[in-house]
Amino acid sequence: MSRIGKQPIEIPSGVEATVKGHEVSVKGAKGTLKFAVHERLNVKVDGKTVLVERKSDEILDKSLHGLTRTLIANMIEGVTKGYSKKLEIQGVGYRAQLQGKKLELALGYSHPIIFNAPEGITFEIDKEKKNILTVSGIDKATVGQVAAELRGLRKPEPYKGKGIRYFGEVIRRKAGKAATAAAKGGA
Image 1 (spheres, helix red, strand yellow):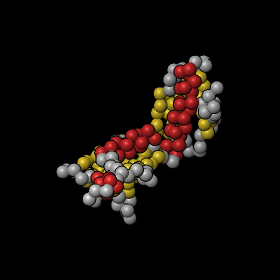
Image 2: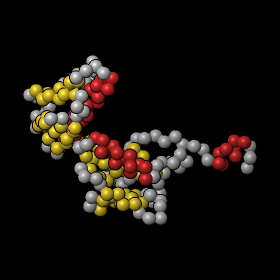
Image 3: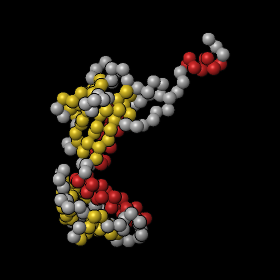
Image 4: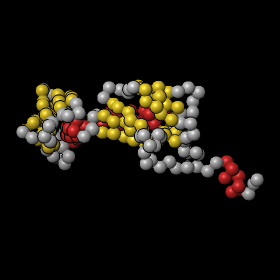
């Protein structure tokens, strides 16, 4: 039995979970999320708990059991608290500006990059530290995907550390050519 899959999911007050066929819908203060459950699993709502049950002990069923339970728990947490990821923009002249729901990034290219926010995602730039960007939303996977796409626009490089990185991410720095020439005894 899956240790994670067999745990019941508590539904907090203000959240409504419904199962219609193989679709789970979770409605809360921040919005509504839907998820299509695999036909090999059953989801039941008993009062203030959600239970995920599998039909057999096959390997696929076991792997889907814990995954489905975790995805439904993430949906419930998303509609109550929401998710956010912080990104740090580092580099001379690198900056971000909000233009409505669009994000304009200057990342050292010859042109600014306009990034449109997908539905359900909001951007926020720190007022004091202009280089901190927060990506927020109710869907954990979408928030993580958008943060990864933003980071991919200008990955942090190992020599000077310029680029977009996750807040608190440590970039291993490399020594440049001058450091290797000095170590060899050259000029």
